[in-house]
Image 1 (cartoon, one colour):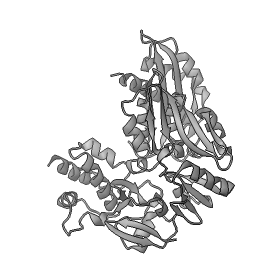
Image 2 (image 1 turned 60 degrees about the vertical axis):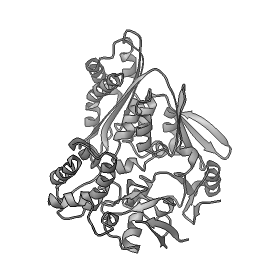
Image 3 (image 1 turned 135 degrees about the vertical axis):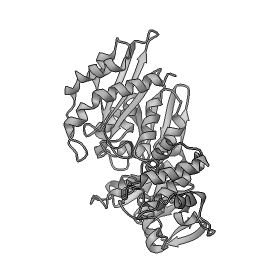
Amino acid sequence: MPATGDDRLFMAGTVADALAALAERGSEGAPFAGGTWIMRAPIRREAQAPFYVGVGRIPELNAIDVAADRIHIGASVTHARLAAQLAGVAPCHGLATAAGSAANPAIREMATVGGNLSTSDFSAADLPPALLCLDAEVELATTGGRENLPLERFLATRRDLDPGTLVTGVTILRRPVLTGHARLPLRKAGDYPVAIVSLAVQLNQNGVVEDGRVAVGSVESSARRWPGLERKLVGHPLDPRQAEALAEAELGAFTGRDGVEAPGWYRVQVLPALVRRAAQAALRSRS
Amino acid sequence: MPTILTINGEQRVSSRGPMTPLVDVLRDEFFLTGAKSVCREGVCGACTVHLDGQPVVSCLVPIGTIGEREICTVESLAAAGEPSPLQQVMEEHDVVQCGMCFPGILMVLTGFLRERPHADRDEIKAALAGNVCRCTGYERLVDAAVALARA
């Protein structure tokens, strides 16, 4: 039974309740978690859905399970909780930095992992690049069952999810990688970053990069990996200055989006410096 | 369907719909006008209140999602008629200018200094990343907060 209900909002107590309500409303219904994007719609003259299913208080979706080989993060976990609970948990240095530096403290108390990943119009989201580097999988649920999708595929298809689909969580494997996250807001903090770089590297015993992931956010409409740079990092020690130079040579991979806060070319041009900072952060995370 | 809210320790009943932003209910229905409705998109912090002790921007909180969580507004800080230590130090440093951002800043700093009572200047500035002062009075209010943290 609903905890709260009327013609526009139903607060679900369980995932099953939420899925049933979403299925009943079909294309008119949408999940509502932290609300930090949806509630801005009126001032931006954007449409809200006719009906929302609140998922923010479902216990299963608020859990973070840290096991020896993997970490599962419920979709309604807020940025503040993610930053607090994954600080110092390998390999989540970059992810905890992303969660703890996004937006501002009050928003971080409200905005959720599931909302951040599902908001396809939010190009400057911090969690997608951090989670892309960790090879995260997104768990989707419908009344027909659950399935896991690689985050990359989820980001590419999230605009076209079937009505009634709910993001229930994210899973990452605990690979032996160092991670770092660097972002460039125009103010010191509090505004959207014009560009984001997340990095995860596996070093051998000599400190040479054996495997690497680099992901870029806010530069294009959606976060994505940077495979050309990843290939070049392999086989060398992780040197922040060298990584910056390698990034400089690979900038042709991106076409920056123009926006009121920054032109597209600027977003691309700051990437090498952010790669350097992300590499420095990853190396610092060892100590 | 009416929505029952716990505001500053009292149960209140709102007749507004569950997707109504909390700031509108506070101001228009219960006349708690400390929280200011300014940007309405979570950027300026002028509408900050506490939900179970944590600062949130009330422009983005639909009342139907609050449930049994306790809402505290800036009016609760001097509920017994005596300004809180934070309010007192702000007055001593002559911080207040137009007053639009100030209730939100008080709520953010009240929550932050409860968790980090001896925070340094940089930490206090980082805590205020979501509060915009149109009078640009940042230095004096940070000075005041630093003075309280050192007291």
